[in-house]
Amino acid sequence: MSKSKPDLSRLSPQTRLVAAGRDYSEHGFVNPAVYHGSTVTFPNAAALREPTQKYVYGRRGTPTSRAVEEAVALVEGGYAAKVCPSGLAAISTALLSFLKSGDHLLMVDTVYHPARQFCDTLLKGLGIETTYYDPLIGRGIAQMIRPNTRMVYCESPGSQTMEVQDIPAIAEAARKAGCLVALDNTWSGGFYFNAFAHGCDISIQAGTKYLVGHSDAMMGTVTCSEAAWPEFRAGYEGMGQFAGPDDMYLMLRGIHTLDVRLDRHMQNAIHVAEWLRARPEVDTVLYPALSNAPGHEIWKRDFTGASGLFSVVLKPCAQIAADAFLDRLSLFGMGYSWGGFESLAIPFKPHRTATTWTAEGQGLRFHIGLESPQDLIEDLREGFAALKANA
Ligand SMILES: *Cc1c(COP(=O)(O)O)cnc(C)c1O
Image (tube, rainbow, N blue to C red; front, top):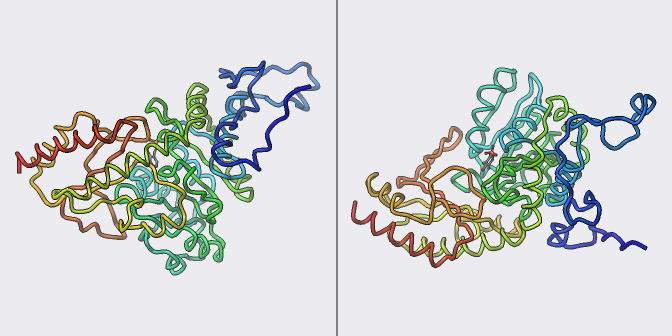
């Protein structure tokens, strides 16, 4: 007799992360194999004509890709998922799968900047029009929906400036008008915000960030509701999307520890953000997990946790002083991307067209890693000393 399989639908999210994708393991090994495969051979001519086997061609799926796709869908609480070689590839593949010439796209003004560029160049060239909207528009989105609006695209919290969107209000208005709602759910890891329970049809992540979680692989994910799935799947397969097996495996591996990593990122980030908020050099801390921070009420209503990414606006100071702050930090690397185990700090100037960013001081985006928050705070203290010395 074999041991029985757990019924995942009855288990808590933490337990599901541990079980995710394990159905594909063999020979008693805990983890599934990494299949490097293009060609799959068929046992005879009849089986080639009328395939009954599970796998027919590398790009159409391997045990490794199926395991990671199932794991992502389980994390997100969606019907099914596909993976792409980067987060941006996931965004572009989702947009191209659902939008056609003549369609109108409502895009949040705080979207990840390369996605904006994709809309303003490639989508525009295909005859797909994009209008940017205020992330805080809520149910007011209804007034912007046109007869040819096919999709409302959200990202919450917004890139760099961290506005928390009222997704249920937007989704209700979109649903009434027959539009799809897509969300870039990267900040929550798909784990602290259930896109589908809040009315979205499509949830996209840069798996590069928290799902992979170790700054070593690039991946993207698109998870869909049952209704949206067939159209997305056709687009994904038609565009020949897939990803490398080792990178898929790294993301599956990351998913098993997502809960503990995110929890520590959150605890550390709250600690560091509270400290930053009390500093005289800091004007505003933009981290919805902090009480009284912008977006806190909606975050508390809709999210079950916060990740380690937030922003800060410094009080106005000379460029050389802000640069000295960043240059002095030794535990905070300066680099794009985030979601790995290490802390990062990077300056930003948001690009907005539907809204105006009025803050006068330098914007800084922090990713708080898994280091001791005490050590991070000491490092930041040194940074502020350098800022002061250059003021
Ligand atoms: C990083 C990021 C992306 C793009 O992911 P890549 O894997 O770098 O292509 C998309 N959306 C958000 C919110 C991101 O932070």
